[in-house]
Image 1 (cartoon, rainbow, N blue to C red):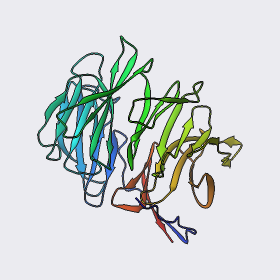
Image 2: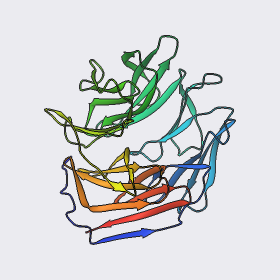
Image 3: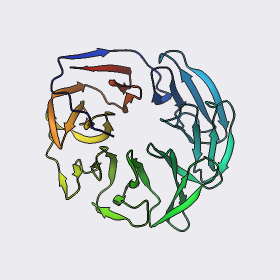
Length: 317
């Protein structure tokens, strides 16, 4: 995929407010035509409900897994495909699959699954299955939703914060865990560890070969390129508090990384390009963000989810 040039100047930063206000709902997918969400499990662990909307206002319940605490995943490359995963200590576990936007479901995997991710280049699915007794995580791959094949076992890992694959090269895989970042460039045949004394909060590939960013619980952000891994000195100060890097989001079709930072008092979103802070963009609020997300069909629309609602930021030249 050809990386487009970064916007040099933001002449307009249009912000639309109060478009979503439901603290019991987690938005997981936004496109031009449809929005998917699920109920937050800590409000009700007896059911996992899937909802859809066209405008972030009225949500229609599509399906509910009763007495199963799990998480839904929408395939960003095929809107009809939705997965549901569960790794409960008690109760039913596994992966359920729908190819008709959540109307009907088939169980396709029967081991505890913590996370699922998708590969754009070959339309593959990847899942992490946990084994608490053996203290290990197993990586599975599938290309038709029904036939999952074990490709790697990672010992001494059962707590994974994030799991992602290079959108242009499915052999490059990242696991962000409490004991550092684990990276494979050969689809799990071998693994390399970074920052083993720290907890990795988030990680993201840029789309360029073998390049990624990651943030840590110690408030640091790093960039890995083809030759080296370096700590980025990105400091955003507001009030008397230092902002701690948290969530990373890639703007599709560009090499722009949007970074969510928090100080506990104020919070901010900044843009990073080629390992440097881009001063043309900054969004700050006096309350916490719990997620930032781009419209999958329109990379000019960035959604910021806050306790008192959501804001849509339009990025324009």
